[in-house]
Image (cartoon, rainbow, N blue to C red; front, side):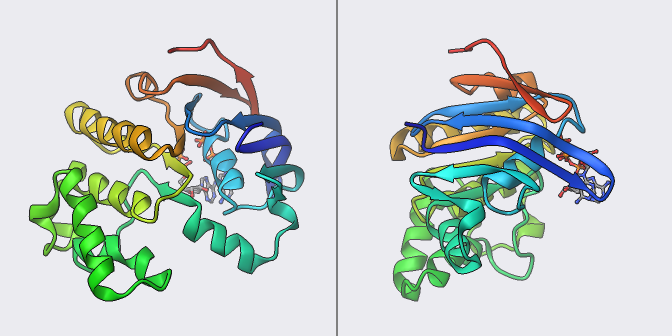
Amino acid sequence: VPLLSARGLVKAYGRTPALRGASLDLHAGEILAVTGPSGSSKSTLLHCLAGIVRPDEGTVSYGDETLSGLPEARLGELRRTDFGVVFQFGQLIPELTVRDNVALPLLLGGLGRAQAGARADEWLERFGVRGQRELRPGELSGGQAQRVALARALVTGPRVVFADEPTGALDSLSGEQVMTALVGAARETGAAVLLVTHDAQTAAYAGREVRMADGTVEPAEVTA
Ligand code: ADP
Ligand code: ADP
């Protein structure tokens, strides 16, 4: 039984069609790359699966819940507890320190300050950015910022990590460091990863790859 599953997703932005009947299964613990050219609706698919965008048609199932049938409050809860997201440009909060950025999801989840800070430090340590914890995001390199964004995505112990072009703004060495950190953390925690990328080097970290073309998903060869 897949952990997360999309069936027949259709989504248009005004008159611009994006998804045209996309289906996909993500299994517990797997790292799945969704590849394809710019504009093939990879991000839109990820947004639908993560409950950020509601499809016009089709369903997304997570366990025994159907995302489109959920009240906004339950969706918000899922996004906080079960899902973690990383985008191309880390999207850290510029006014907060690195440490507070990573602690924030825990504070929102009701954890106390001291515990949240301690857990944030653990994740910063494992991603090699603990030394930067008092800095603001603007003082980080791109690779450091993405590793902080990873720490923030993983700190709550999500079952699914959604990564949208996580290496898209990085040089190839920083990209490798970010992917190594992501894959290692996923293996250790058992989180599944839905990785959207147009970069073959990044996709090579996945256990399975599917390709998007014109808003639908084509199965591609198993890469590992
Ligand atoms: P990809 O991630 O493969 O580059 P996207 O999902 O970002 O593809 O975009 C798919 C199509 O939907 C593109 O034509 C894009 O311009 C359009 N699109 C995506 N997001 C929006 C939006 N918020 N408003 C209008 N059009 C959008
Ligand atoms: P990517 O191809 O990496 O997904 P894009 O540049 O297509 O990045 O999109 C970046 C952001 O802008 C996304 O949140 C997407 O939904 C939004 N977007 C993309 N195309 C459009 C558009 N035509 N109009 C408005 N928003 C868009």
